[in-house]
Image (cartoon, rainbow, N blue to C red; front, side, top):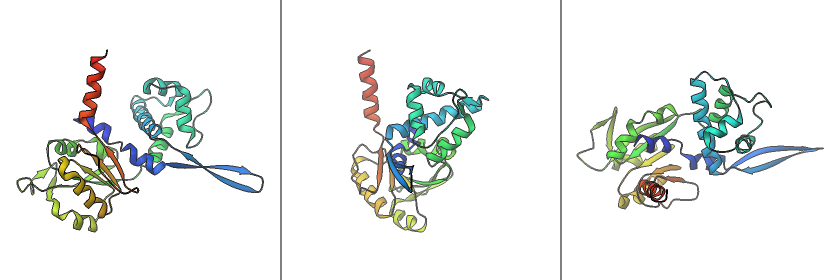
Length: 241
């Protein structure tokens, strides 16, 4: 479960949507031309991995890193590392590599991790419990502020310092304090209604653990975690070794 939460903390698709296009500048005589570059979700995923590796290198006291070392750790190529970073500027020096703290700080900025995100969780079940207790969210700036459920037996109980609130109050609560991200951990038959209510309340990013595809407006980003699909992928790998 911690592994699932660890992968989910990245919220890749919302970041990809936020980055969606990265502005570059081309200077010509007498004018500036703004170039829009598409940033793929796979690039955002790799940036998140690079950041994790850089933090590990920093913890080990390593101050510089080459694109080849990042590539080996991430299972990619030096050219891909350089291409991913080139979308956002010029980093490092030829023959010297990248300064670990500087590159880590820049990637945090690119991924939007220099601010705190307010997160609400809907569904006080076992998965929700594991997610609320996962410390990596707060370390990355994702602050789970409120938990909601409709079960009277759960409402009022305390989870990791938070009191489970009645889901009937969600619109009123979000009107008082805007929320950046919602995590939906409900049964499939309840997920779409919850998503509709979250969207109506102004939530623009949803991490969905319910086994159903959510329908949302174009300006709302949904990232789904399908645990059955991941297990089936592992099953295929074991069966075909």
